[in-house]
Amino acid sequence: MIEWLAQFNYWHWLALGLALLAVELLGTAGYFLWLGLSALLVGLIMLLIPMGWQLQWMAFASFVLLTTWLWWRRQFKSDRHDDAQRSLNQKEKQLIGRRLLLTEPVKAQVVTRLQLGDSTWSAISDQDIAAESMVEVIALDGITLKIKPYQPLEK
Image (cartoon, rainbow, N blue to C red):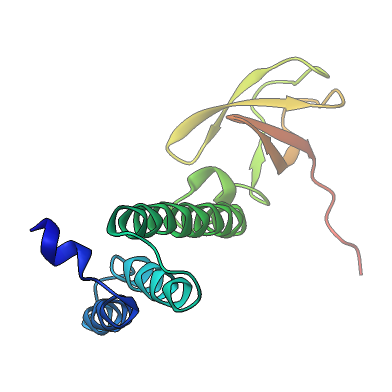
């Protein structure tokens, strides 16, 4: 086995990289992409610098870990940004803009409970609001709704 590994040259790495990229085309969702690119990198480096088989495999493993980690970081940041923009299946975000009629007065900066839809929510306001007033949900602070008196646009 070691004799076989010791015979690896840049052509083997380039062929392995292309084979792994071809497998990626079958729809493996990126699992073989970074392996293939890493094998191609090792092949290109071996064109310039001859390396022993141990260093070749260490370089391959390092490139796989590095490229996978860099992609994961990029994808994670992108997913977090996309999730922040999305309101589908995020009931709290769907509540922003909803209006309801208060049954009890709300004091400024005091957390109170509101019935909204089929749930009760913690809510807070920057100002006192009288009972029987219409309020609008303007934001969320964790699981607490921020509300303000509703003022319809006059035409």
